[in-house]
Image (cartoon, rainbow, N blue to C red; front, side):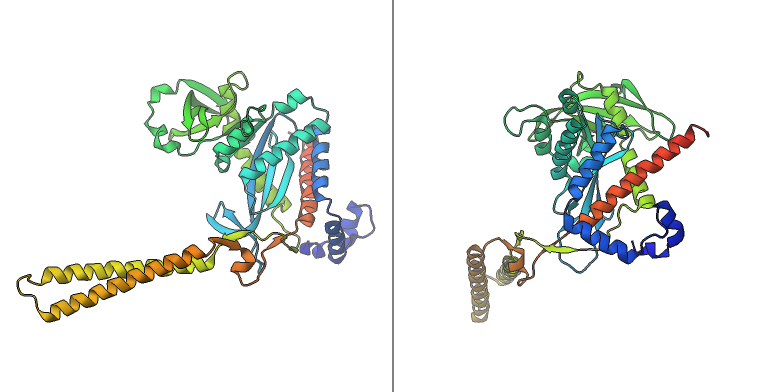
Length: 414
């Protein structure tokens, strides 16, 4: 937004049918009015509906992934996990859904307190509702195939997608994802078990042949799950794919093809960042949180630190007593030695009493308190994403427009 001041107003205005383009101050006021309307979620849904109706995006397969957007400002907001830097940071999430050819058509901008596990069901329900509005049959909508990364590894999520979270309800979607903790057993498998081959065709690079075989694994808190073990590359790297779809629902070869192509969404996110600035935040607007989240009680934390220090002193005192007893000859006890032992005993008793008193103090305090209570009245805030959602709708539309223009050119040039 700030870089727009460098645009030539007379030349850029022609692109939007005006003699001059608005300056960045006018655009700021406009976005402020957009934020006050609070219609960004509806706008996202309307764009997604248009993409499906006009065939820009296709139904059937939906890749889901999240992008962490760090925040380095001074306001206290919730923290999330930065997947690249592998550290917790203040920030937000951009959850993006793309079709089988990695065409973006639906996204969510959310606080970092809402991770991918919570957003996958929301994106699925939103996508199904939009699919029905676009004129798709209920049978086709229910046959949705969803792919996501290891961040979505969760027995609870799998049961939800199976419809087992509330008794025996219909399956919500066929999911395909990478398995976690497979390194413990997958590399011990014999080479002869990989008796099938799938040819994976990519958008840019040459096709690749991937060996695989199908089996079943027992997942904690889920039960038996269909597993497809693959081996690819010159180094014969192995991985395991989990799915709740049966062989009648989706063939093993297609599962391997879809999952091995998942990196295309990572490339899509990179392109949206580099060419369309999808990670840009058009100014930070904070709002008070109506309900302050619960956090660990800092008073309990300090008391536990005190307790650990006392326990360390107690351990040292007991070692000192043991050394003192072993060094002295039991047949030649002296008064001085007895006085030293008595002092050590008194010290041990004192420390044990202090530990007991600290435990009593901890038991009287709540383990978790509101954020404002833990930080002397300072309130935890949240960011308003109305302006960002509005701009991201335009950016995703610009991606589709550029893609369509290039495809038209390809009809006339190689």
